[in-house]
Image 1 (cartoon, rainbow, N blue to C red):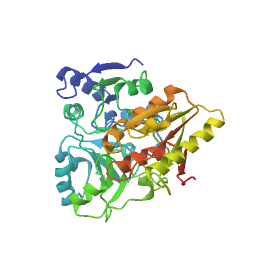
Image 2: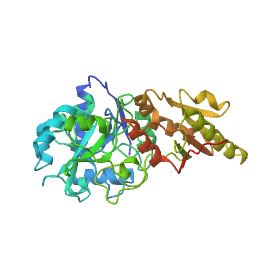
Image 3: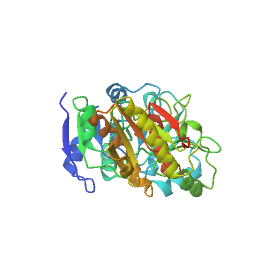
Image 4: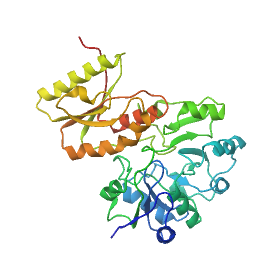
Length: 357
């Protein structure tokens, strides 16, 4: 299959380009497109064969549901039922934006979209290209991230091309995505609501908006897998580079100095084994590693910058052809919880820092 790559203005999408992409979707094809989070792999959500194609192209497990993307709050009534009034109030505050709601599904939603679950994941993206596609099609678009399952999510069209060229009909090239990590997912069918996947909008902010306490299970932190995948990102290993990645958590190290000392001792252990090592580090710490190969991910004082660069750096790792990479950890507040969730799921090994003498 030849994959067409069309450039599209991310702010004012060209109507002709959108029309061509919509036609592909109407004919049952797949289109990769930019959103404010990561690039999505879209299909007409009411076309069963197209939705099935998403799973086969990505190598996605069949019990891992998809997110439905809508362009208007009114479309909630099409894909969900028994929606509480507070959901509409919350949607009015966070949509369009990087927050996904899990709700009771309507009878119109395909079994393949929800992986047979009685719930459906829905969001309204805050990206002109995504919204233009949905409006042009006239149906919600089912779209996971536009990458091979298990690989780091794509934040540029080049990432999509590397993973899916020759496997899908079209890629819309609309520049880098804004947030760089996938949407926050919250289950609103439970009381209290449950965080299923952390994302750009933190739990703290959502609790203020809803006046509700939101539960954060271990799988949302990335420390274990969910038994059942109620939404993407809760089950299975995700986001992984091909390079062995070791995440060093703060553990018992209460200061940055103690943490860096431990990380350096771990690096030395690998170097003594004659392994080629790289480190994913912050702006504040990269210079502490001397001649070691470093991948600067962003400032500890700007976790949105770290999130935006995260998947890009994980993909760059594989180009370095090192034996092992070590990643620093970050504070788990706001978008920091999303960063640590992704790093834990991407890592081959997670170790806790222990102060060294």
